[in-house]
Length: 237
Image 1 (cartoon, helix red, strand yellow):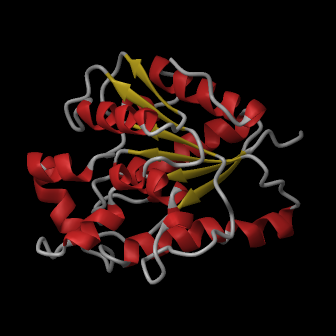
Image 2 (image 1 turned 180 degrees about the horizontal axis):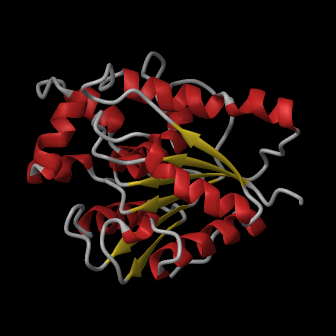
């Protein structure tokens, strides 16, 4: 069966060591059955050697390592979408903006594997607001530390990287009480105002329905991935 596209899955868990790549396994299994090649990415997390800058370096290196895998397995990386849930949504959008990072920043430089689209599932896309709200019991400061280092926070925040040159689509559950809808709304509003391609899809479930194959929320995620693979520009709404 021909591969429809490559999907880089980045799991959530508020960047903490409690959660790992096993969260992405059901998504990968479902998508492989639909004809996708999946790269279920793991990274060092806060409490297990991660945080700043290790988490960001790992995500960048993990995506770039796809180039070697593509050579080994004959994969076409012309359609490579990052699919990230919660904190993984943050990392997926951050990774799509790596090319514009200043020299010396974690993940800076020409990406070895340029992403062609991002689908964020209940992503933490506005770190400033997330920090102010204390989301995840202070998860942002737990990830980044050094609250007196504004440059670090600026480099890590997707809001400061708009506009990106790849489409970013946010899927967010109406019943999500873990990550507020304002995280997606703020990002999409800022991105579209800056001339980027971005959209928000509201779905009926909670924070985890978007990573539950078989749910209506997951069906919408798959629709966006299909559109990205077919045209490179997912359909809004």
